[in-house]
Amino acid sequence: MTNRTYPRPMVYVVVWLALLVLLAVTVSSAFLPLSWANTPLNLAVSVTQAALVMLFSMHLRSAHPLIKIIAVIGFFGIAILIVLSLFDVLTR
Image (cartoon, rainbow, N blue to C red; front, side, top):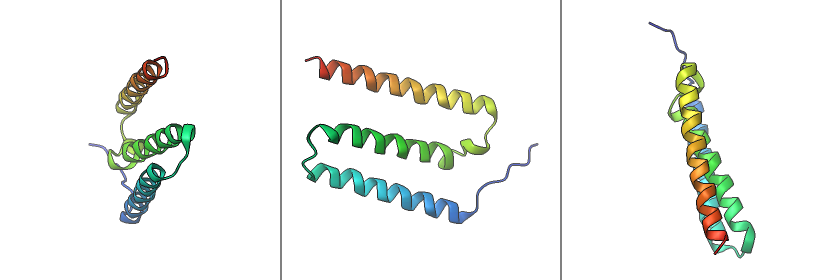
């Protein structure tokens, strides 16, 4: 049995507030005329949100190293799919 230390509840409140701020940025970017900068901004926000969820909600900060490796592989697999989809859209 392992002794894992989990973050204090205040950390979860801060992460939740950060996710809400990032959500507000995403929603407000839909109403701003950012032209070409809208897609990179929203992708950066979504990657940040995913990283926060992976690190704190999924407890990957204190997980076993093998689980961390598997999570990183999954994260990069999704990133590859997003890049390939963007190449398809941009070449049309």
